[in-house]
Image (cartoon, rainbow, N blue to C red; front, side, top):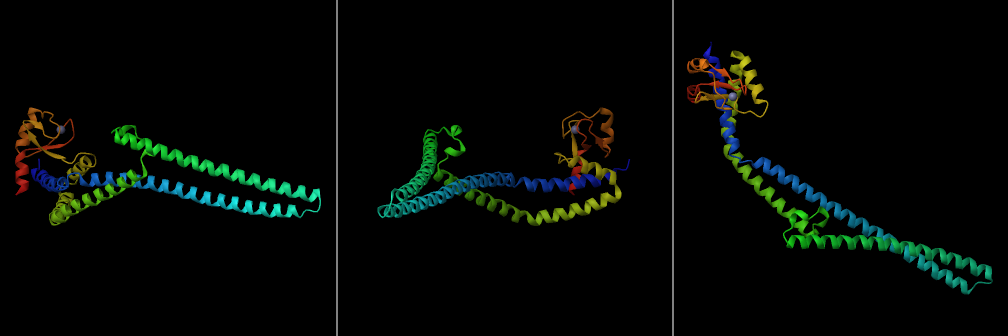
Length: 266
Ligand SMILES: [Zn+2]
């Protein structure tokens, strides 16, 4: 067996591990930021939706009040005309017009009441939410129950948290940028070499790492694959000790002697 090929691959794993170690310095910050940003967007949407409803109510109220005012001035004019009516027919016709305008007014007033009721319900729902917050019964609070000011506060808090975490991550990224760049260059070069020398091994490596596995090449540890702890058959130990590799029957990882990793480091 050509052992230099596996040495090339162990070197690649060693470099990829170093990148992994640097990424782990980020302590899950990218995932945390994504989650916070999702919460932030969700809160923002809730606030926008409430604002939209409030704007809509305001517009409708203005329109209805205008209608009522128009109807009232018409009624005033009709009543004046009635005092000048020359006969019953004319008077009755004006009465009908007044009646029509009065109906318009009462319809508009009903709609205004509906809006007032809806707004009252919103206030009461939010009061209920505030009560639950005071009693620490957070799991009973629905979206609608969150008081406007609490929601606004939440938006600001989330915004601050996102900014803070981003700053923290950014400083780590900046600090490690040179190292990451240099490692990426080395990885690129190493891959080119293996591509020429041991393409099938590289394919196997990439295939393993295309899933959740990052450590495609692992050390033999206490006669077991250190990736999944499955025992390696005794008749394979000699080959591993001699610098060969073994494909774990359980997880598919490439198992080598730890000495190869030491060599790859130098
Ligand atoms: Zn295994």
